[in-house]
Length: 112
Length: 114
Image (cartoon, rainbow over all chains, first blue to last red; front, top):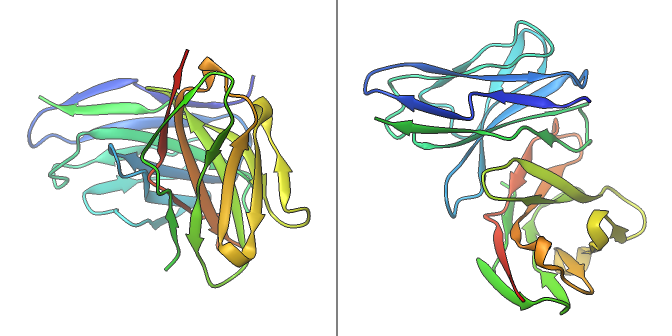
């Protein structure tokens, strides 16, 4: 079955450490997205990519970085510059244009 | 900038009762709209979408939503709620030609009493 796979499901970060969240899709979608979800705040866009080798900052990009070297992969790195990284991170993809986004099951990041 | 408001943070309904979840948006252009549902610890599942045409749209799991341009609303409804509908519901709005960037509401948590 086609879908979006996020790994790991749970991740722990030590102070000053960078961590990378994986997102892989086999839907042949051009566009991919990373969101951060905090209780009571809905989803906020971190980065998005509409095509391979290109990506744009979303509303809360500070402290995060991404790459899009392959169509099916869009990893997110949470750097040590992100001072409040504890959150639920969701990856999504879409065909593009006005079409719906499809979501993975998320990664929960916590600070040790 | 566009914004989406879901005025009800929590809603409790009895099983079998009808449901309406409110969504209001602020947008200067023609929007396209979605409702998503999220179970605890899971991703979001698409319930329904509106792009144009008929303002009453049908979705999965017996849900429907009505787009009212004059009220800038896109409320989600279900005639008879089942216990399995307990979840968090998100309204999302995008701008036609806006590169598929969506703005999400803060969500409504639905509790179903048996």
